[in-house]
Image 1 (cartoon, rainbow, N blue to C red):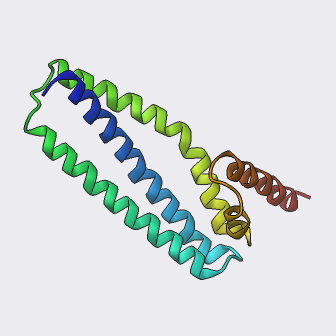
Image 2 (cartoon, helix red, strand yellow; image 1 turned 90 degrees about the horizontal axis):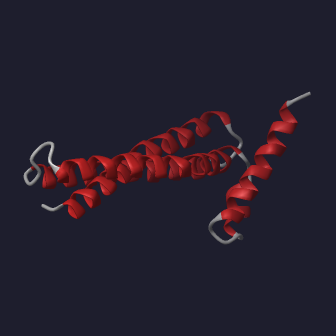
Length: 144
């Protein structure tokens, strides 16, 4: 296995690990929305189930990739160092995106009609802007 393959595998494993943690956090967000929000329970059940299944799939992908490359990598050579650097870079890059994804999931789980309103917008920054706007509105209602 060469250095490029080690870097590529490190990038993938890092992304998969972050996706597992993020999916579990989103699943717990939707599950807590079942008890504490005014959103339809079916929306929160679907969101929690999909996020949980997604975390299982990404955990299996992480394990499978790690098993696949563990037979080909000897420790502390150029490939291992490239893989470790790719892993760290991927984790740092992915962590920057987690905040917006968690905010979007929280707004879907707790804000009535947010999911329907966000579906009319194109994917990307406009949905996140709507989530931030609604989040500020919800915070304004709570503060005296």
